[in-house]
Length: 488
Image (cartoon, rainbow, N blue to C red; front, side, top):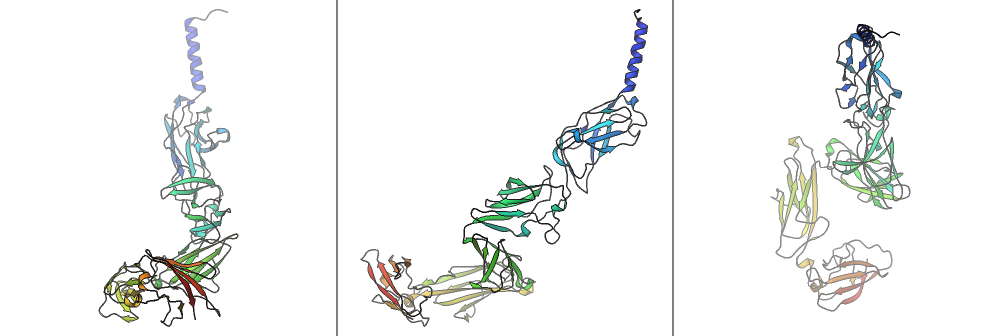
């Protein structure tokens, strides 16, 4: 075979190059115009830019296609998400706009570009998160009950409500969604617990769930539920639907407690007949208690319900115990309140104290006191009032100068010998220890500040007058011992 001349070789090279140039297209790696695709029904539009060459090889029948990989970045299960019109793209570089499918959910998606006329495929783009937010509003768990309890060694199941109450848009209506459960570690921090539509809680904490949209921000999250492990007789909680205090003129409020197997409600210590549901509706103030049967244990909870519609506090005296003053002493009592244009009425032994209409009063004498705080209805606020009662004792009547330690008392409410009155040298202020022991050997009373106030509660007996034993031990003297008989 003869050698080709230079001219023949050059002609062959040009012909071959022209053939190759017309026979293939090279497409560059796509550049993304976004860092993550957080799509929703109101927004689903994303751009990519790519280059191709030679431009002359692109015919009027060519179409460019965008393929989306699987969530792991593999194109083994790719999906076509965009196809251009024939001949619409002929100039390089080019920008295409596409939408992601409504089922995307992952952190490592990629896209690539293909041509149809002269088949060519780019390499995959950089990986990016992609989520379609089918549900993007707050939703409820645990029927919106804020607390839950489980017995020690047991568990409590938290579930997403479906459908829930009111206008709750349960994410369970969208089968493709997944969920992440968290436990709060502070008001602003959380720790991941588990995935799934429900959570079996075995550790006390404050829990909530979010729809899994990865790094995309979202409003698809639940209310918080405080779950507590309790032993038998442990403490639960009670909430008021209208808050506490609430305005009684707004109608009744609904008291709710933690979920259990059965319930019993009480008011001021007395059982409420028929009140055996998880909720109880009332418009009366008072101390409400509920006993919750959790299966293998029970829990109780209380709320001191105030229907005044405003907050008030009293200082300077105790509401639960006697307030003691000596002859010539005084007590300054002050009421603080956030009531609108409040009024104050003070009472002594159920009689209005004339001229006392401010939030302070100076007590100079013993007796039973009450102050009523009211909110002025002319302001348009809640029309309501609340009151505080307290007792002031003391003086020569409270610590009388008796010479002997009595061995008999008759606590029948007639005002005579109702409590055990002992000599002044042993009462409050002398640092004397006073101990009273039952006939069974149980210490029923013990103090170093005796107020001549035993018994503080009624003693239940039928036919036999109970006998107690006392030990009085002064700080610098010998102990005195004896018996004390309680008569009807």
